[in-house]
Image (spheres, rainbow, N blue to C red):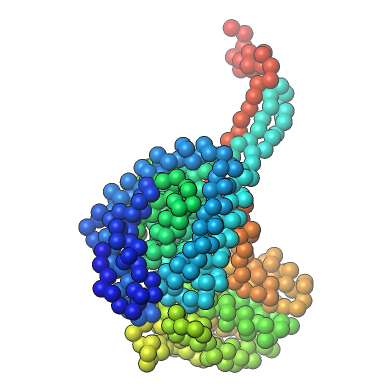
Length: 511
C-alpha cells in the first residue's frame, strides 16, 4: 500500500484509511492476495491516490465463507432487530457525510456539490427507507383453498448475495445492492470497480460501526475478470446482482447460469428525450442540459438522444448549445464547478473517439474537445452537442457514457415514439409536452423502465429503478427491490387427522 503524498491526497487521505488493505472481510481490512496491485488515480489531476493489492479468488472464497457463516444469525434476527441496525447505519452514514462526499469526489471526479447534495443524501435516504422496509417482509395468508388444508406464503432470504457494482456511482451502487439484500436477511459480498473502491469500503466500515455483525457485508476489491467472475461462479453464492454494461451483463448471465442462481441485471441505457412541438422550450432546454451532463454524462439514465419535433428543432439546438457553453468545467473541489472530469483518461479518450468519428456524418455544434490550460492533466471533456446524425449511426445507437447529447428532428408523434424505442435499450426516457394526452401516450408506448414527463433524471427511494430489453431485468430501490432479494415458500397445513389417509387412498387405493 503506497501513496507518495501530494495535493490530491490532502483532499482525502486514503492511504491513512486503507493502510491495512482494500479488502473488507469478516469485519476487518486485509490485503489482497492476487499478487497484483492497482492504483486509484484522481481523474482531475492524474495524481495517485492509493495503490493497493487486488483481490484474487482466495479472497473471494474467504469473503463468501464469512458471509455464509454470518447468514444464519442475520437471517434469524427479527425484522425489528434488522430494522434497528439499519436505522443506526443510516445515522452513522449521515454523521460521516462529508467524508463520504470528499472520497467520492476524489475517486470519481464528481463536483463536491454533487456528492454533498445528491450522492450522499440519497444513500442516507436509502438506508432509512430499507430500515423501514425490513419490518415489512410479509408473507400472505391464503386460507382454506383446498378443503381441509390451510395455506400461507412465506418470504425468506435467499442466502449469500454476490454483487458487482460499477464505477460511475460507487457509493450509491453499494447502497442499492447491499441495503435491500441485508434488510431482507441476506448477507453480501460486493465487488466494486477496482478504480473506485474507497466509498464501498467506507460503507462497510460504517455498517460495523453501527453494530451490524461481522460478515454481513464484505468487500472484495479486484478486477472483474479475476475477482468478479469467481464471485459470480461461486457455488455458495445464491444470487448475483450486477450493474454495468450490457456486454458484460451477458457474460455474467452466462457464468451465473452454470450454478442456476438468482440473477438481477441493471445494464446499459440510451435514454431518449422526446420534445413535442407544444413543449415549454426553455424548460426542455434546461432539462436536456441537466439530464445529459449529470455526473459528466456517466449515467445510464442520462439524456443521450433528444428527438425534437421539427417546429422547435433549430431553436432547441441553438439554445441547448448556448446553455452548454455556460457550464463551468473544472476542479471538482472548487466552488462554482458544474462539471468535473470523466472517471479516467481511458474513458475520456473513449468519449472523444465517438465524437471524432461523428464529425464524418453529423454536425458537432459545440464542445467536442478536451479543455487545455490548467485542466489539461485531468480527464476533462467539454459538454458536447451533436446534431443531424442518422438514426442508425453509432452516436445514436451506442452508449457513449460522457457529456454528449445527440439531437435529431422528427415530424409526427408516431415517428417520435418509434424513434424513441429504436435502440436495444429500455432503461429510462422522458417526454416533454403540455398536452396530457400526448404525455400519457408517451408513458404507455415508450418501452422503458422509467418515463419522466417534463423532467429528466430524478429518482426516489420509494420508487423502482430498472430496465426493459437490453437494459436488463430486476429493480433497484423501492419495495420491488426488497422483494428481489427474497424467495417465496408455500406452506400447507393438514387441519384434520384423516386428510392424509384420504389422499393416500385417492392416489393408491385401499391397502
